[in-house]
Image 1: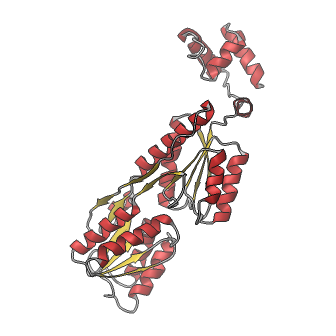
Image 2: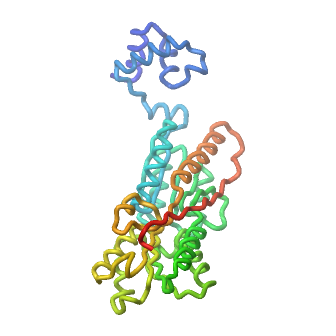
Image 3: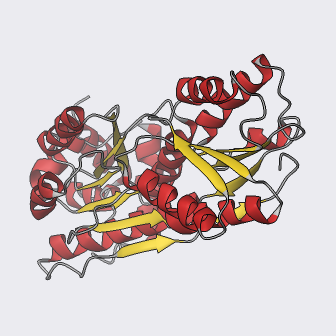
Length: 337
């Protein structure tokens, strides 16, 4: 049954005009002071008829799609999957749909995703950027409300909500030093990404000021990178390092796999620590000490910020000032170091 016929049928069954039915079903009952009785009758009949609004027609009429685009660098990464889940839940609570794209850590695919969002007339975009400079994102942000999460650019007028990665890595390295570890290996992720650069900086600042031997190696937030770098570091000398700090839980899993292959026991022969908090880390033997990022808070603030920009745009008000916020992570201490 067509949308107009649906409205006419509901109107006929309830005795209310088509305009009243339309206003109830489009969420404008309060604005037009429609009675609670009318709302109840129209809503019940709409459910009985399995009424579905024509979203395309609404988008063309209101210039709003009730949709937000979300682009992440790797949906197969548990960290980004968790972050995406939080964003989806926040948007769903506000009655919005989400288009998700995976840039696979490549600027070209990120641009394709952003262009797809624009073609689909999304109302706003939340992005984990992979580009090395902000120019493209700033151009997009002039036309569509845009908020960056997890990663940001040092000099930009774009809004971002991220973990304070420097503070997290500094805290982790200081903890390892205070526990008495003297030779600490850090296995990093994508070297050019802002979170990684800040983690390297925090790690080195904490250890160099104490004169503790350390090394940073690696090139991806992946299991394979963790496995490869741990094998390379320990194959010639099982005692080359007495602690490993993995810059993500995926890197950690690869590193532990390599250590076990070499007969090195994590938590006993070598202390291990992870950046990122995943529930499964408590079920490992030993349970893994890690840096917990405030993902729920990051997601809530990012969505709230985006909606303030979208509302200003709808109302013709000046664009609010950018929100640029770094949130301090926490250390979760377990048995691995």
